[in-house]
Length: 289
Image 1 (tube, rainbow, N blue to C red):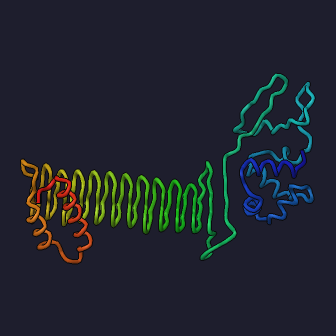
Image 2 (image 1 turned 120 degrees about the horizontal axis):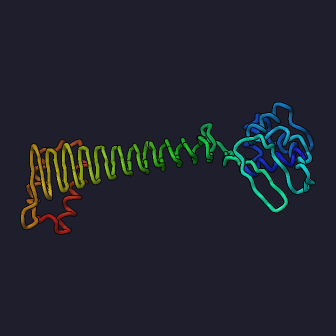
Image 3 (image 1 turned 180 degrees about the horizontal axis):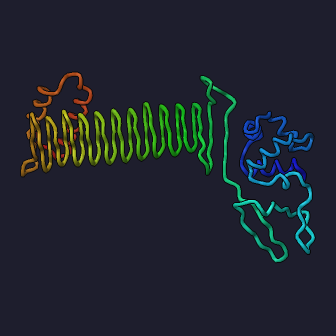
């Protein structure tokens, strides 16, 4: 196997394009193509860089013939890596013991089209920490207008751990609208959420709805605490509080009157949302008008 064939095989196994491989080494895609077709040879420093990139020895790259095992003839279809390299596994057949080097997975794609100096799409995924940065970014760590990854930051973010200016969806998220197990945002929904308008098992905010609702302005839930508190089991309100009566009813008109009289007008959007929630409870039979 020639040097060019070995470079092609190692690059393909890693899932790298000629362009990405060339960028990593500081050469053009055309140079990589010439290497792989044996039209030219890489400089010595590039050979060293290739050996380090793929964790193979320079002997493996430069020697065209496979190393012979003691007392055996080497098959032209079998090649050997340097036994001194680390992180390798042994594969046995009846006649041959082949040492195969394990390579760490890495895949990267970067579109040629750009917008605002960023690639339109950048995908960068690997077993080692790698980052994707583009208009649409997909990777271990992703940064872009739309960011998808293990950790992400963008306008719209989908990641277990993420920050989204407009929308963030994941496990632990912060965003304009945040949906997650632990969510913090202007509008936050999740098991534990904190924000202006919140809905969740434990909801903390100005306007909160949940099993445990802590709302500075309005709180509605099984247990509710706030200026105006409407609770199914328990309610504590500094201005108005009401717990569901024995027959399952609330004084709906009194609740709405308290909201209109005490919640500042600049909260009208969120106030109307809370009124909708209360009204839905009325229509479902949980509150009597």
